[in-house]
Amino acid sequence: MRVSRRNYWRSRRNPRRPHRWADILLSAGILTLLALTVARLDQVATRHLSGSFRINDGDSLTINGERIRLRGIDAPELDQQCSLEGLSYACGQRARQALSQLTNSGSLSCSGWERDRYGRLLARCEAGGRDLGQTMVETGWAISYGDYTLSEAEAKRAGKGLWAGAFEDPRDWRTRNNSPNETPHDWLGRLVNFLRQVSGMT
Image 1 (cartoon, rainbow, N blue to C red):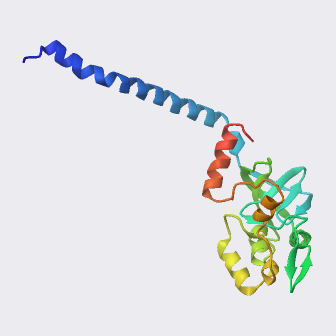
Image 2 (image 1 turned 90 degrees about the vertical axis):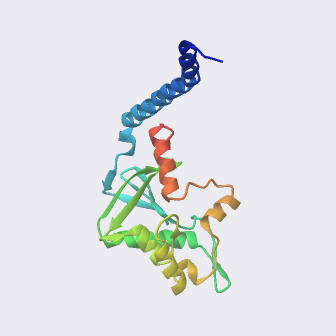
Image 3 (image 1 turned 90 degrees about the horizontal axis):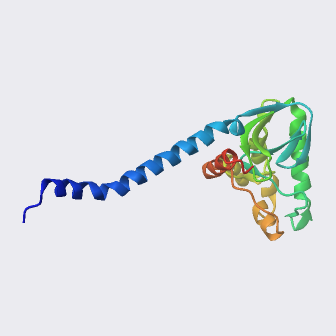
């Protein structure tokens, strides 16, 4: 059976027509997303902060009214209790004291671009040339929350800070006490924070 040239090309074109519309819609969607991202790049610009501050707990502080969460670590909550040689002690208060002592070693400066679910700036902070997050993990008064895993292993092996006794992971403590947890500060958390910020959800 012979097929006319017109019918042949018509049969060749028709199946491709839905794909062509799908490509156009996909391209339009990508261009729209790029335009929105560019328009909101100011939301992910790196901020540098220094000046007067106060320590809130073992992993957060406030600088000139800007709430800061130390990126990559998790310290016991202020009300959290841990145990040492069978006795309970206020490890959340002790972690806050440790961070306060570290900030006395020199001028404090922080930088970061991410924000957590509470709107706090996730930042790396230094005082006296020392990375506060890393030092808190090294001394055992905070644990890794997406960073400083080697420092945590060394503190655990040496039995420093929290590792000298028994303690509940702060994330588990928050869950048990009906407190919300934030996304860990790993690559996936960074992607989630970026998408949240450029979409205006923070």
